[in-house]
Image (cartoon, rainbow, N blue to C red; front, side, top):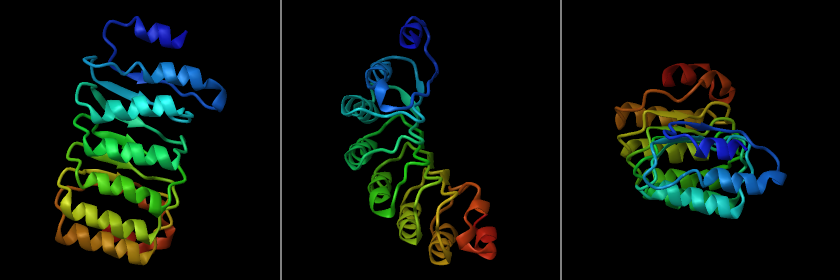
Length: 204
């Protein structure tokens, strides 16, 4: 009923719906299909959703094709599978419309987040990305520092609530001081207690 109501709107400017649990797979498939070519710009909130393979394929296609005007996407608490992260990363390489992406609370580890970071080396549309509340440590921070040296578009990369230590924080600080002039925020670094007070203050 929610989907039908949204489809009837003549000017769909924002979509926000939270669905949780695996029993709603068919509804999520319909939800993702709200992304149609030549529609107005969409902000899609899929927080707490369980993506089926079909929904994921459709969504990542929408990210990679300029005919779909998806500008903001939240996948917070979606716990994307490895295959879905690979598909998302590949889609981001061709993205021409998405400017904000939330991957917070997805239990990401450095080895899986690296695929997204690699895509950001080719992506010049995303300005805000959230990696908040994952399991990302110094290894991730070093990889992110490399991205920040080459990406001139990113304005906010939220890394709050990750176990990044002094070595990772120092790598980020060096990249920001020497090679980056565009990043404005790394999120609420008060949640990153492993960095140490001095490095947190310097990064802010």
